[in-house]
Image (cartoon, rainbow, N blue to C red):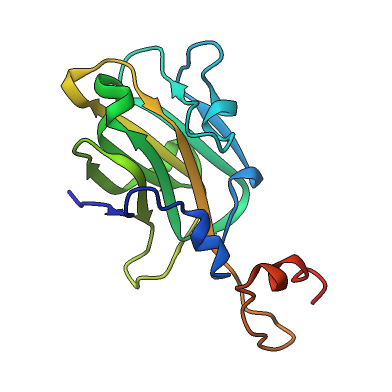
Length: 185
């Protein structure tokens, strides 16, 4: 069991993106769920709104499958959970699995969440402490607080490291002015 690194309350993982060291790649993946209530599915999980959520509708484990079209480097997985709002729907035990497809998934991390409130950052690294390369990530909710049956997840973000330029080393764009024009470089 490992404990995730938790950001201070209110800190958004988008601040990671502003450093220029990572970027969010969830839009490049195909997302699927083991179950969901109508109107509480993938769209709500990915809409950047902390008031909406995915709600499962079935037996545990509840699964979120994130599949990439090609082998992709993943550095960090960020999950937003809010015990105060969701109570028994809040995950308490989560497994993160990676692999090429559904048939060869291997557990990378298993986390115990104790009344989480905010963003939970889950670094995904191999034995050499390098970001993993994978076709698929599966997040399995194994248990909820207060023995709840269904689960709520408010947001999930997937981050990859930003590659250095092959032309030459440019300084990182960290200010808003620089970031507006970084694609020109």
